[in-house]
Length: 75
Image (cartoon, rainbow, N blue to C red; front, side, top):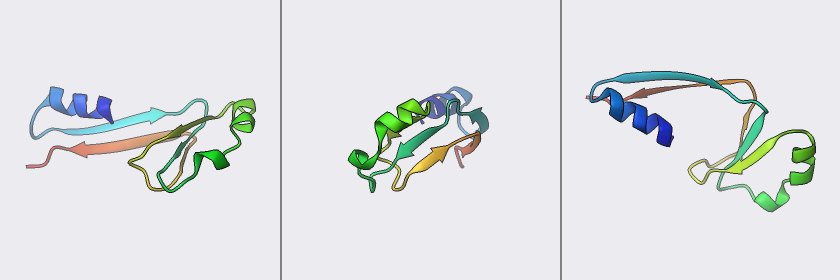
């Protein structure tokens, strides 16, 4: 998100940004409604998966292939 905000500031007011990116290896973002202690981190590590925590998410998100975001400064 920080990177996206820097891009928006660089392009200026009124711009629109459409960004694509991929996750390798697959990763999981835990949200604030998940208990990180319930995740088998050793198994995730053995499977080559990354686990992180993002308080701005409510639920877990599994990042597998490609993700896109569309940002608009608005008027």
